[in-house]
Amino acid sequence: MSASIAINGFGRIGRMVFRQAILQDDLNVVAINASYPAETLAHLIKYDTNHGTFSGDIVIEESALIVNGKRVQLVSDRDPLKLPWKEMNIDIVIEATGKFNDREKAALHLQAGAKKVILTAPGKNEDITIVMGVNDNQLNIEKHDIISNASCTTNCLAPVAKVLNDTFGIENGLMTTIHAYTNDQKNLDNPHKDLRRARACAQSIIPTSTGAAKALALVLPELKGKLHGLSLRVPTPNVSLVDLVVDLQTDVTAEEVNAAFIEASKGSMKGVLGLTVEPLVSIDFNSNPHSAIIDGLTTMVMGTRKVKVLAWYDNEWGYSARVVDLTKKVGAALKDTVIA
Image (cartoon, rainbow, N blue to C red; front, top):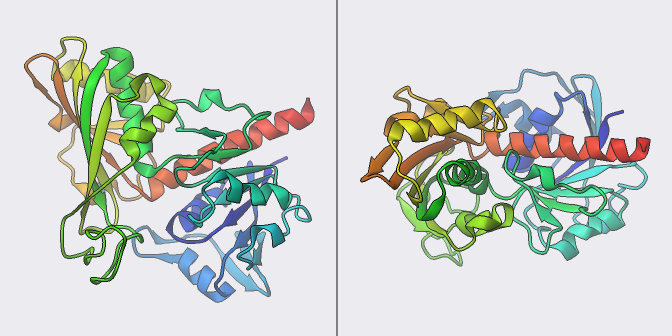
């Protein structure tokens, strides 16, 4: 029996999660909570500037969408306590509004009847932060009710850092994410608490903060305090790039570094980590489902221990793919608990 899913919030990530989740046999998306009419939601599912046209069938019914023959109930309430999760027997709420990321607010979904909540963002006082391929083996379905999928950048950085640390040992390092603009920025100059993000996103390279390096310690505690970084928001709508420079504990060559990534991509991180040696640019990674794709042509070693690695990631599609993977893992664990 597939897990019953509700998506709360239907912005960029909510829609990309829906597009992927609706195609999964072991997930049953039964509800969307959003503030827009069915016609608007259907149109934005069907047509997407970054990711093209959805190939499935969408039929609009009163307060519902029929997608590929599956009925998805539409609800519209900004108060999670009033959402019909108990009546709909919802197993997992995918919290994608960005407004309920602290434990107290996310727990309102549990009070409304959901069994588990997955945050599509870094959380605050969540039960656990999971990065698939890195620490998903730590999921405890008995203890973890509110689960953060971390950020798109942490999902890129963590697999890369884990491979380097497990194979060679990391002394310390700095990372920069060259990041596509997002809804947190302004199309034209307008007030924002971050004065740099107040500037027009498509006109400038915008330095700003990122919590990815700090959040890394939540999934790789052995690297706590060893990495720091910042973000450069650039005038492209999708696909980002982590630039990681680390000092290692072992002498290496660029070939040995790439070989470690290739080995991981074929083993425990298959589907999460990739590597390319083609001369590609950002658009070539649009709609790529991996969390990180190493640019093997640009791997550098200075001396014998200072290493520079570039890793591409689709900050929308790749991240949403991991949300779906985590949801499937939680759903399977819930199913096993019921059977037991």
